[in-house]
Each structure stands twice: as C-alpha cells, then as structure tokens.
Length: 346
Figure 1: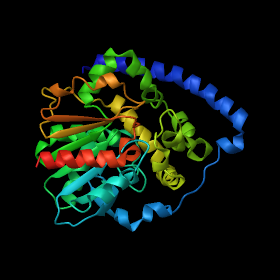
Figure 2: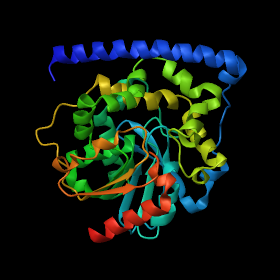
Figure 3: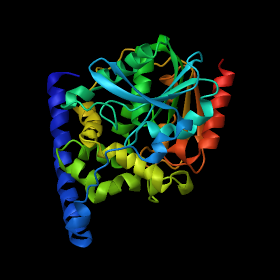
Figure 4: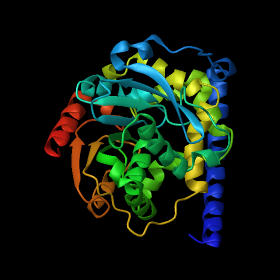
C-alpha cells in the first residue's frame, strides 16, 4: 500500500470515526441522564483474581518473558505431552478457554495465555506495541519459552486473527490450526470492502479509532458492556448457563486491570494505523479447522465461502444456535469437533 493511498484511507476512517463518536457521545449523555452519573462512573477496584480463576482444575498460573513483554499464562497437563496453545479474543482473557483446558489436559500440555496488554500480562504504552508483527512474535516466543518446537494452535476472535497470520509466517511451528469465529484476514478484507452488511457489523472497529471515548464507554457502569457481551440477547451466549455471574466477574477482572482496556482497544487502532503489507501468497498450509457459531453478530455469515483459496487444507464446522463465543456457548460440541479433527489429522 503506497503512502498516499494509506493517508487517504486513514482520513476516511477518522472522518467516519468522528461521526460515530458524536453519536456515541449522545448515547453517553442519555445514559448518564437516565442511569445517573453514580452508575456511569462506577469502577470497582479488583486487586485479586476472583475465586473461579484460581480453580486448580484449570491449571497453574505462570509468567514468561518474550520479546519486550511479560506474559501471564495458565497451564495444565504433562510437559511430556504435545503443546496445545490457546489465544483468546476481545474482550476476554485466558479464562475463555476454561472448558477446553479441562477437556484436553489429559492428552496435551495445554497453555492459555493472556495476550499482551490483557488481564495479568504486561501493558505497554503506545499503539505501535500492538501491531500484528508484535503479536505474532509473542506466539513464537511463547512456544520457544515453553520448550517446544511446534504446537496445536487454538484461537478465537482476535486471537484467531493472530493465529491465521502466525500460521502463514511460521508454518513449521503449527502442527494443526483451530480457529473459532474469525475469518482468514485476507478473506475478511475481501468481504469487508465488498459487503455493506459487514461494514455495518464492524462499526465498532471504526469507533475504536478515536481516543478516550471507547475506553470510557466500555468501563461505564463498572464494565457493564463486558457483561453485555456475554449476557445480552444480541451478542451474548445463547446458553446463558455456560457463563455464570462468577465468569462475568472474571472477565471484568481482566478488563479492569490498569491499562488493559486501552491495550485491548489498541489492537484495533494498530490494525488500521499499521496495516500489513499485502502477501504474495497468503495461504495457510497447516491442516486447519474453522469452527463457526452460526448466530455470530460480529461477522456476516456470507464471509465463510471463499476460504478455500486462502487455506490449503480446511475443515469447516458450523455450530447451529451458537453465538460468537462458540467455545463457551457450546463447549461439549466444540470439544467433540476438535477431537474429531485432531484424531483424523494425526
């Protein structure tokens, strides 16, 4: 992408972000009027993990350093087993994989990381610290720091975007790739620019480009929007019993750590500010499984066709009635699909 086209793209993006920002300011004003400033500006201090995150059956907590950042992770299973590495999405943390950690620790060394800036991982200032090359480098560093030469890479949402990219950059480090409710990045770009519905569904990506206001709205009402992601009827889980109030508190703990909210939004800002150069051959060669909750409200369902030209060996499995958070919404079904894929590709 040349310099002038990039400048034009940024100008258009910031103009749209400004319009959305004005609308969100109006929403904010009405929210403060009707719910009150005490509710809107409430922010509970969370200095320690909620009890559910200390569940020993999920694994043990640890830290490692890779590149320029200290990362937190939870691990279970024997170190003699193959590595299964989990990457979470937005607005989440390692705890998103609680159902899969319990299921696969018998057969793998399962490790779920807090991606840089999230939850208990180190927060770095500046959006440049969240550009894709840094995120991909973290995955490579984690694999090496854990003493492995490859892994089964399992990812969702933003973690999936990183995982697709990592699999293209380091195919020898990915034995098998499992992505959930996130398209291949080149398929997303292709669909986004041609599809009005996807542009509408991705409005928040543009909104996140403006400063301060996104952080203020996400944290409003003691991070009520985090709760809404999992509990409301639009974006939330269809099987509400699979995300308890304690689980929501875990995700609020992650979002409320100092600097974590801005760091998470900086992923989106960096994606637009520092776009990756077009690849000559953007094809994933590792055996890949794409699991898709069919009630996803973040991605248009028509984004699924066309993946075969970007993934050499792709298995697509749709989960009827499941939301964007498919691995939490239908954990039993997702775990069965994963096991079938892992067994058939060994």
